[in-house]
Image (cartoon, rainbow, N blue to C red):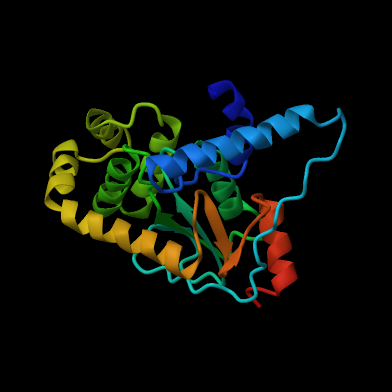
Length: 241
């Protein structure tokens, strides 16, 4: 059974990290059986045959309202182009898209008019994602946006070792006072919980976020996750005029 499930799981992984569907054990067995049948059909399909078309999600007809609030950002704080990402520190796809954010902030055409905002969206099945989010927020509180983005890079680069001990090590490496950092994590735990909850609810309710990474430019979903993709979306929607 496990071998048969590898194909569809890989297909889902190409999209990004998404929470597993809920349901009872019976429902889970039924879904697995349906999945097995689909895999068997794929295996029997003649070589070179086209894959069956998947139902496309309904097109976005209006920009989502995604306020920056107090979220960490980089770039021009008054930028007319707002690139927002909902991210999870244990999601490998999020780590791969992060360099693009820094490229966009430095791009000659964008750097003076883009504001890049980070929203926390830790998925429930990534047990270390929320503690990592709190470490990033504590870094922001102690060292501002610059410290946040430095911790951000540490977390993405070490997704397999997101531990409290390492958070403190990385805090020191990015120039923060470790005692103050550790204290902030304890004293501000409820505050960080609330901020993470607010980010996650904003994404789920206002921007229809279901997985990570999810990116938006002035409220429009960015499907082509590249600097050129950002520019193309700006042109298509006549943004930042």
